[in-house]
Image (cartoon, rainbow, N blue to C red; front, side, top):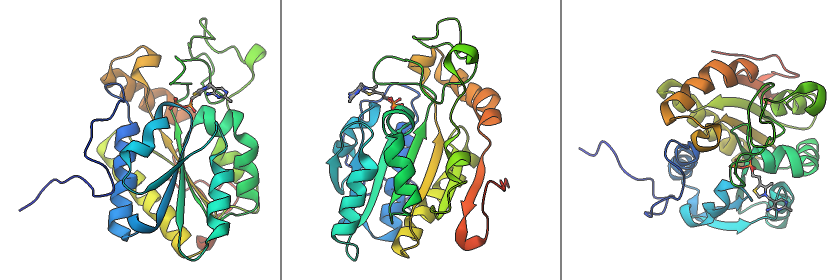
Amino acid sequence: MVVFDKPHALNDIPMHYCPGCTHGIIHRLVAECLDELGIEGQTIGIAPVGCSVLAYNYFNCDMIEAAHGRAPAIATGVTRADPENHIVFTYQGDGDLASIGMAETVHAAARNENITVIFVNNAIYGMTGGQMAPTSLPGQVTQTSPYGRDTNHCGFPIKVCEMLSELDGPEYLERVAVNNVKNVKNAKKAIKKAFENQINKKGFSLVEVISSCPTNWGMTPQKALEWVADKMIPYYPLGVYKDRSAGIVKGEVKND
Ligand SMILES: Cc1ncc(C[n+]2csc(CCOP(=O)(O)OP(=O)(O)O)c2C)c(N)n1
């Protein structure tokens, strides 16, 4: 009996991610959904600029590399050029999606583009060495906030799901995490639902995945997962922020 297998939608090559980074888990969840929905052959993924810039090597489906933050614009082009035959997902970090690419994100959501956005929130700019991100927590020590993020000087973190839930456009917004088995299972459910929404032409789905960056947080992988549970999730509550088809609108968070 096979109890463990690599999803077909993931290539069988080593990933470059640091020990304890959760990008690999999230890649796997996306790939499992492509396998289970039988859509690998019709899916185009959009890789970002950030640690997951090489995602085009890891996914077996067609991939396009976007300029920093511009993945939703490219996804819009793909889905509008061939709406009947293509499934398209973007895979973006918080610097990519919520900083330089914020306008693309908001407008794609407002237009209810029929795309799936996988938003990996690790509260830091990973690839460039750990600078403060729009999602870094108040008090969080980063390379550019060595005494901790001072909200008087640097403002407050952006809560993407809460913010987008105020728009009439988006179909589905959910925040999940991958710090323990239960949360990983919920994350998979949310990612699958996002793809199903797209298959059923319901429009814009964004799944925010609370993630860890042990290297740039300066923690062991284990400690980083504890920090996710103790600091990140209380600031970024998990749950469904919008599910238009299920009648959940405007930030009525439904945690299970
Ligand atoms: C136009 C442009 N501006 C800035 C950069 C530098 N840069 C590369 S990755 C990155 C941020 C990545 O952080 P995030 O999106 O949170 O992803 P992570 O690396 O943490 O997964 C920045 C600012 C760039 N490559 N291009």
